[in-house]
Length: 310
Picture 1 (cartoon, rainbow, N blue to C red):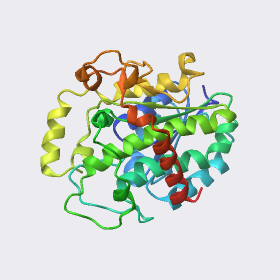
Picture 2: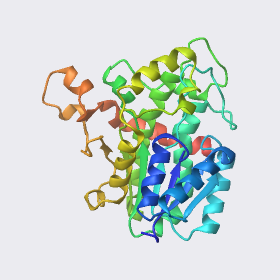
Picture 3: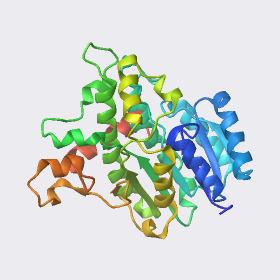
């Protein structure tokens, strides 16, 4: 697989790091796209030495910054003739943190988790088009199950505001961003189908978080996350799902789908014949119908184009 190139954002910790290991072990050319180069360098060396794969590159990328994304893409175009796999893994979820703006004056959670993947994928389209089997994976979360509640909806005003408020919650912003990312997945799949580029999303039910990640949370959320860690699978469990979705023949012609941790294609809740709400919320077969609202999908798409200018 030495002729296959894969970009993994946030590849220096958690599932991203585990995925970088897996692809490197399998002989892929791995491009680690990380915000902090200094703290990521030893991870790169560790992966190279452990896997005996010297084709592990490390490039600076802050997915919340349009300038950083554009610089990263230009570097990739200079260094690589094509891109086979793009995994939009990086995410901002520092629960308990106060309201923050990105470098482009956009609420940081949405900028990192939605606008970043949109701009990065769109700008890399020329490299993806040169692959015979191009695949994009957007990393989602089961936090979208909050939208089974018909009263829940994406708070677009929070995204556009440049002022904090006492009611601001990173948790709620993260929830909204992951729903918007799923909608973006559906739209990208339609837009990029003409270029034979498959775009899917993986619903992540959780993975053990590193000490570095836990330390970013406020005290209350750190305790909650530490308890959750007791029940979450190791990071390489989900990393293996990344690998299967992005490389196996099973998913070669699949696009515009949400896939669960069992590698099953999920369906909108309207296809659930059971009247039990618990079956929808607690199960892993269905996602909220809210994600299929065509007007909202177009709103997310238009918002991405408006803010990025692409």
